[in-house]
Structure formats: C-alpha cells, structure tokens
Length: 372
Image 1 (cartoon, rainbow, N blue to C red):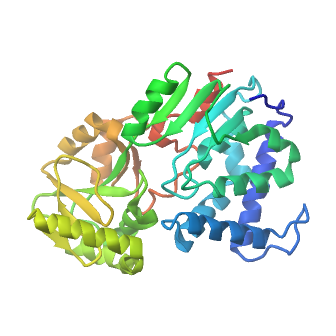
Image 2: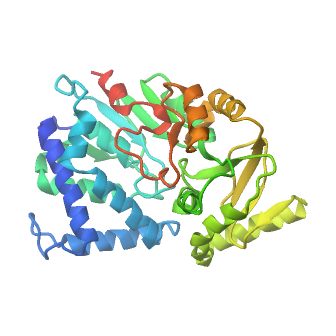
Image 3: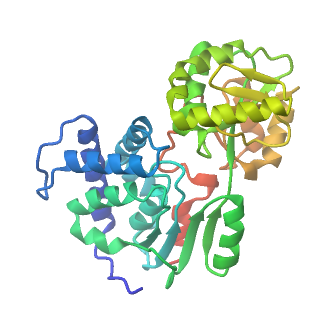
C-alpha cells in the first residue's frame, strides 16, 4: 500500500485531537451548535454513530459508550497531550507504516495505539475488530475535520496486511501465538490476556468498596483492567464487600449479563462449588487463575502482605492492575519497585488510565521511536 507523505507537524496533530476532545465534551454537555467548523451537525452524527456501535455490539450499552467517550473527552486536551509527548524526541521521526490489529472487547479499546502512532508521526494502518469498528473512525473523522492533512496519517485495512514496517496487535493468548508466528520477523508489540486483582485487608470503608464496584463491573468486567480476582486475608468477612457491590445491582437487568450469570451459576452448582451469591454476582475460591467468567469473581487467601507482593512480582506478566491502598499498597509497591506492570492503582480507578499509562507497561511511544 502506497501512502501519502505525512504533512502535519506535532503541533498540528496535538491541536486537532485537542479540538476533537473539546467537541466530544460539548457533545456530552448537549452544547454543540447545529453546524460546526466543517458544516457538519456533529451532535446528530455522533449520536447516530453511538447508536450504530450499540447495534453492532450489544455489550456496548448507552452507559458504557458514554463512559468511554467521556474518558477520551477528558484525555484529549492540549495540556494532557503536550504533557504526554513533551519528553520524547518527536522532531526526529522518519515516517513508517505501522499495522494496528485492535481488540473489540471495550469501546475504543484500541484508540490509544492509533493515537500514539499518529501523534509520533507514523502512518497507522488500522485493522479494526468487527466488534468495535465504528468509534475509532468517528474520533479520527472528528480530528480530521479540524486538520484535513491528518487524513494522510491513517488508513483502514480490510484484508491481508501488507507493506508495513512494524506491528502492534492485541488479542487473546491463542491469537497471540498466531501473531507471533505471522509478525515475529517485524518489530512488534503483541499483547496477550491479562487480568486485574484487588487486595482487601478487612479495614476498607464502604466508600472504598463502592469504588471497587466500578473496577469490577464497568464494561461488565470484560477488560484487562477489570478486577476479576480478590486477594483476602484468611477469615475475611465478605459482608462489607457485598454491601459495596450493591450499588451495581441494576446490572442484572442487562439480558446478556443475566444470561451469563444464570449460566455460570448453573455450572458452579452442578460442579458443587461453594459459592457466595448476592443475586447478581457469584464469588468462589479460586487458586489456579486470576481470570473469572462474566458475573463472577474468584478469590484466594493470603497470610502476609509480603507474600502477596512476591506472588504479584512472580506473575507480573499475567497482571494489568493491582488495586490496593494503605499497607497493602505499600507492601506491593516495595516489591514491584520500578516495574511498569502491573500498575498499582486506588479503588475505583482501573478504568481511568492516563495517556502515559501504557497497556502491559510497554511504552508505545518509545517503541515507535526506535523504528526511525
């Protein structure tokens, strides 16, 4: 594929995406005028695209779409984009074609890779997941409306990927093996399954447990930053935990979530597992994996926080986030040291990463700079 030379400066790109973020903010506030800079009725167009995304992927509900759009509206400011990029030598980039194979489990889950490639000054060859192929084109369309030359920074690939210089691909452990085989001879970032865990000590407040409910239930627990496992001390009383989860009780009204809850409950009961159940979340003891099916959580016991920190250090390649505060966070932080993954975060913040919080702890911008 022959691409046009990129004819934008870093400042042009930052300004375009910052204006796109401002437009998204105005949309969320219902404050967009009927016609914007290019004569487009963006209030209506954005709403139509969100409705299309929801029809194509029923996990993308109105609430989750609004949350994802809100996160990007807040991230795409000139201040944030400048702070993110200021330490990188982006004035010495030789343009390359970067193939991007995105996941589709969450709304806009692959947009950070797309943004990174474009901001650096490379060309993004985007192969969207069929589960999320509406929203990234929408955001790029908005940004390009403020800078027409931005269109030379990206293209979409439907069939076989060809004429690329490097690859960033995200998928399951199974697809990652295929990616390694197919793309292994090119510079690459290949992401596999990861999970997030929360460390509880029994000294948490109800407010912290309610915050944790966001880490568990946002996006129905489908993301690698979603908490799928709890680490609790022996003898832990789950009453406060369930009280905190109760704020998410309306989730059971979602048909797909309810179907998963009913199915997993039936499987667990037939297998005679000991379950704790609050009628919309199942939890059971699990010692062999950090992952859990939808509508369920695994938990395991620890004796000393220091031992837990050692476990996380040894299994760092399986973890995206560790949710912990107080003494638990201190113990984990001391052991993980300068590790960029797993990321140690407070209750309620797993789904609000900043531009410089890179998936799997791999600095995407630095990787892209090594190609020039």
